[in-house]
Length: 102
Image (cartoon, rainbow, N blue to C red):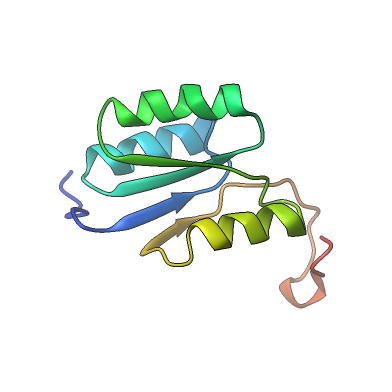
């Protein structure tokens, strides 16, 4: 598949393992500069090495599931072309009922 992502940036949350890591790796292989985030430096470093083996990667130590972590991530990456929000486990709730704390 040719996604024409060269020159694009992609932020993938929940990207140090599982499907988030697979998505980040594929986006990098397709030419995007991929930004990954993680809560633990060792896992973040391992994920960055995997993604970096196929393309460009930038790693940010932050937990975007918290207000402080989200602010850290936004300060580090104020703009992106693609957002893959793979973070979190949520209860079923109407969008308009979801609070910032959720």
